[in-house]
Image 1 (cartoon, helix red, strand yellow):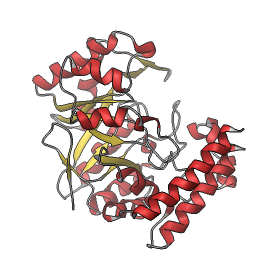
Image 2 (image 1 turned 90 degrees about the horizontal axis):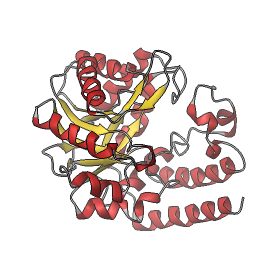
Image 3 (image 1 turned 120 degrees about the vertical axis):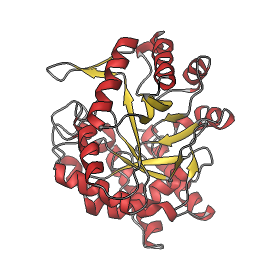
Image 4 (image 1 turned 90 degrees about the vertical axis):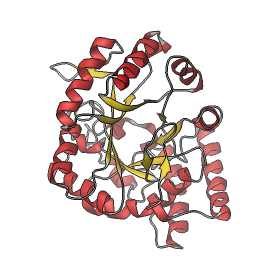
Amino acid sequence: MTTRKLGNSDLQITPVGFGAWAIGGGGWEYAWGPQDDHESVAAIHKALELGVNWIDTAAVYGLGHSEEIVAHALKEWRGARPYVFTKCVLTWDAKGKITPNHSSASIRKECDASLKRLQVETIDLYQMHWPPPDNGRGLEEAWRTLADLQNEGKVRWIGVSNFDASQLKRAESIAPITSLQPPYSILRRQIEAETLPYCQEHNIGVIVYSPMFSGMLSGGMTRERAASLPKDDHRSRNPEYKEPRLSKNLELVDKLKEIGARHGRSAGEVAIAWTLRSSAVTGAIVGARNENQAAGVFRVQDFRLTAPEIQEIETVSSGVAKAKAAF
């Protein structure tokens, strides 16, 4: 399996990694609805069978439950151990209310809790999940703490998530950044203007999340399914899953299906391959909630779009964006 070096680290990662957000299950603010733990473990195992060598999770996913499921899956796994990435700074109270906390004491407490839940001695990549609200100075304290944890051996490499170029520059003044984890898909391209060029110039690896826009571009989303999303599925509150935007998004999905059919691939695989077309992108985080879903998307690692196919997507994508702007 082809691998790519992640930024300034010694991590050689496959183009696609397993995203463990959805397997955190339901009952929390940013859930994807109910989830069966046995199916989650099967999905992780299928991804690893297909060559994936890294898993991305976060303490807040399922309020700790995702990390526990990852640990359970790896305990049963008999193959090569994958890298495990997780995140900090989103904390929760006894009622499940999520609050950002960028203090050194909180991050250290989070790191120890993640090590325990994941049942590992060292976290391969530890990431600051979000910058402080209103771009606060807590960024420097938090990043300095991650650097200290790296020096102490609790984490091997450190990265950030959801940072823009100016925030990356602030963090870099304290310690080198191994990676950035930003949202990126055909429907969400804001990082192309400044953030991706900055990362490429400064040797910061980029592992993008939601390349299928939380399932919208998977090929499995329909008007009926969007309308019936559970209330505890965060997508039910997203305007992209409601009219009039939903119809325009599904037009784009039809084009992805058309291109995928030429290669025996799904719309989701086309959407993921589109993100990997960029030389600035090291890898894409892909979620799967069961074995069948995993089998359908993790084959994408050896799939590349042609230049004419990329142009087809750009043409339809541009039309969708213009139509939305007129709403």
